[in-house]
Image 1: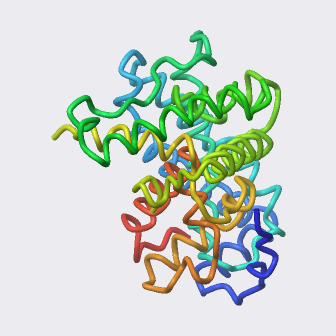
Image 2: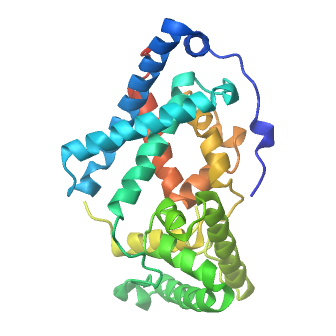
Length: 218
Length: 83
């Protein structure tokens, strides 16, 4: 994965962002007011995220979702204040701060949706070409690709890579839910997924199957 | 409207194989997500400025969802001053 160090840069923040920074670096009543306004901003963002995802959590009551939004805003506030000196002005302050609230809410919602559920690490269903398509040239190529892919998953990957790939990419387990269950981080798990995918692509290329040419790439 | 079986299988295959090109990791993606969204909404070539970001957003559904949410929220609150 390429480094993005070249993307780090300090930019003079816009007037609104400077006002946020000044208020959050002040003391006494002005500071308390700024923190309260920031919490309101983060709570709006957390509620926005809850509202976008509430269809996936129909079993939860409205007040539970409100509590989740409030907890997300509280946690995001702590994160923003702790990382305030890391803000470089690369975006508006509010956009930077929203990110923390959305992340907190999204992670909590995904974990809640999977609470008490077993993590499926065996394929629930392998991809398969549509039956009528297998009679066509493209369908036959897809079937060949799928067979090779199934075999490569069994033969090329370590047990851990296979477990991670199957859970996330095939069974749709959210990456942060799996990270929590396995006691690791989202970043570490994505690296495992990335390495597994790379092995599969390398294997397919070695036997002359190119998923990009067959319409599986961008 | 439901997706065709071909489209569903293509999506599943894409999730298995991930993006073909170089991509960022989750930490770098989250670090730059705010800037990427503003570049996108401002009409800049966000992918040229932050290479590897788009590939990661396609390869990581959690980061992809957070990108969609942040973009939607920023669009919705555009022009408002909260301080």
